[in-house]
Image (cartoon, rainbow over all chains, first blue to last red; front, side, top):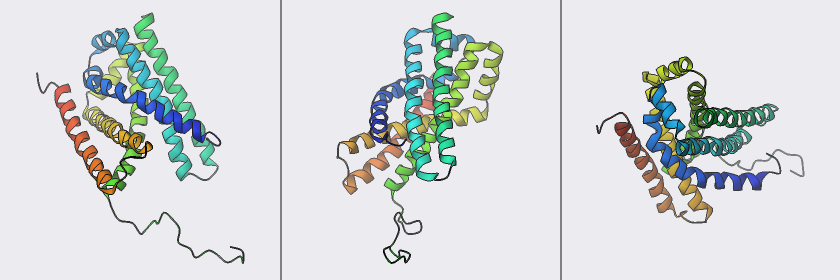
Length: 111
Length: 132
């Protein structure tokens, strides 16, 4: 995070502004989507609008959560473990983007 | 210290000397809910992987979702998302240099806790067919 303070600050706010409406949409959908059976869940995520919005929620959420947790790590961890945790934090965010992106693409556009 | 003596000046933040305020609680809760949402997004990634890969894998994820643990996770995620969203709006407002007056900050902190809880109840009630 060193020397990246300003860009992180801006990305954190910009992603928050995009995540706010996406979150409101997701809150309307979350229970029925998550409790649906296989066929209904596939049908829901096959709709291009749902795929785009959920994909956006995951990808922008991953960027936002990485910055937030990095802030917490830097605040509380001052040993060598700090860099390890920051690295794992990056991996988790990138992994989330890759996995969610691939899954949603497979279901809604290639399925 | 120029003379090498250990500083006797007080350190900030104090670990023992502080007074509980709702604004303090909201600040801590903002971080806590952020961590919950982090974990929740990772768990939800399992849901989309299962949905993409096979009905058998999806059945495993779905069984957890429909268990009491799954219900607690969904309620926790919904409350955390609502709290983090609404308290995040307080933060964005502060970024414009507004809303810092003690009365305002205290009132909006209470408001976020109450609104997040009421909206969670409504979403869970409606989502599980309470209105149907």
